[in-house]
Image 1 (cartoon, one colour):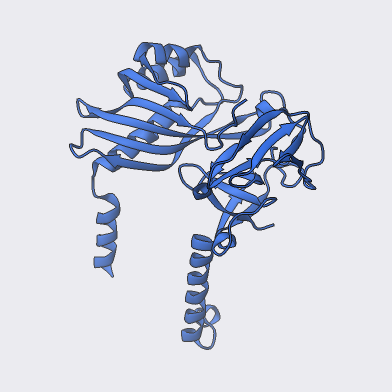
Image 2 (cartoon, each protein chain N blue to C red):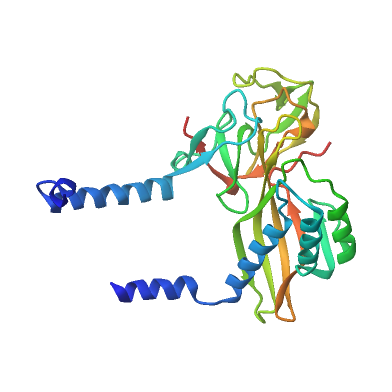
Length: 159
Length: 160
């Protein structure tokens, strides 16, 4: 019985790059989340942390649009200029699937980003979700985001 | 106390409890996917905050049909869309002033109470593609997630 428990513990907690990437993504989701009572200090701290998750140049692609290469500073500026909804929002990455490259220096990630917040007018809780594919690379021992591609689960017909 | 929990025949009680646990694991792990509904896009059929189940077994022996309310997977099944199937593979779909046309015939949709004047130019679905919309057509089209998806993304039919 105890042998089975040890085997389970080893299986679930054995260190692996895949587990490190998933933990890193949990940290990124926490950093992107905005608490209900946000302060200037909190915002600055989050920005400083966010810098550690993003590559110098990030390739961003939304739906079927052409990919764009954007600098880390531009990404941070875009996030900084965005006005968060009152009551904050919580970001969670679920159904995270990590595929490591053969050299273990990069990884492809497929996930659903779940965004929980409150409606600005009614105050009712809202939940939104988007599928995303990320490419993460290992730089100086840290996993950082090198590309982000959002996918439409339901593809709008041509208008 | 032990006698009270396990009953007069502890062995039989344990077998029953094990059977119950295994049944629950099979039922909720492979057949019914619990779904907590968020949002208003399926009003009035499903209201915000309601609990339902996606029945995977519904499509083990038949393909999804028009009018089925279904769960659509995203990266996995922890977050799903719930929408109604409006168009089937290879059908020609259009929406004119809120009325859905399937192969140029107006579609009767008993679940839709009010239709805002949405317009979508005609297009033809590919093999294995389905066209889905929520029941709440009173909302503006740009605020409503609808569109085409593939058979592989259809998790199951909503149970009730």
